[in-house]
Amino acid sequence: MKIKARYFAAVMLSAVLGSAQAETKWDMPTPYGDSNFHTVNIRQFAEDVSAATNGELSITVHSGGSLIKHPEIKNSVRRGLVPIGELIMSRLANEDPLFEVDSVPYLASNYDEAWDLWQASRDVLAQRLEAQRLKLMFAVPWPPQGIYTRFPVETGDELKGVKMRAYNKSSEQLAELFGAIPTQVEVPDIPTAFGTGRVDAMITSPSTGANTRAWDYLSHFNHAQLWLPKNMVIVNTRVFEGLPESVQQAIESAAAEAEKRGWDASKAETDAKIAIMRENRIEVSEPSEVLVKRLQEVGATMEQEWLERAGEDGKALIEAYRAR
Image (cartoon, rainbow, N blue to C red; front, top):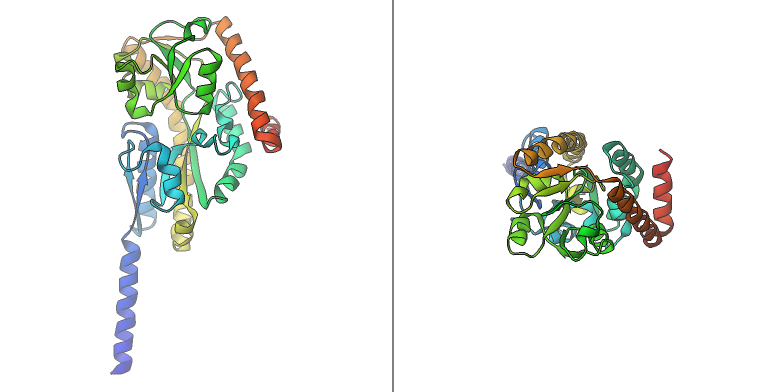
């Protein structure tokens, strides 16, 4: 009887552990709204993980900064408050300039260049994150960044003294080099910031412009294609390594698919959202020769300053990128 009892107890324990595994749930904070293509892609990633693990791991996506605000997502994942999260990579520039390599003007201003830059930088950025007990899962670029205003921008002089929304170190620096006044504003707060006069211009993607109904608060979009910043998805390493190997593999496989799908979606997003802005009477223009020259000069200045901050590691990264 004792043997049978022990066997029964072992079977019950196994069933309980199996049930616990089947109910493993992750909360995933993301900064952007449900209609944003990054969020759509991440929700598909979550569904793929659940399907591949037969429900052993489910990921609940909390969009629009509803669970954790954008500035706190990285540290929340690192500290284990949540196991996984999404953030824009260049937000980490103040702790390590390598994370803003994708936001140097005209270093990589189209998708082919952005992909080459990602391939040259991925491993070194993953190593930086590993040192903080974080695992890099995948990254997806925003469409090329342009300049939104309430007036035409022909030379760049028009931006002097203008309050400009910024979201990372590069957008702050570019604003300052044009004599504008940078102001940090998160995406969900953009319409209110314009409505209250907190900002009068911004640098961002066609995606963000259309998703925040830019036509309600400004009139011009200059498709300057300055850079393609990336969002990345990170996981707490300790939590990840605590999962069964089969689940780890399923997550990595779903991440690889999400990266490919996300890059394709970003490309499609550019033309689609520019078309929406035109339909809503935003005046869309290409930069003039004068403005291009000015932006290139600013880009060269910012690249040199970035190299000084990034040191030998930054120099090696750029060399690897340009060798591709």
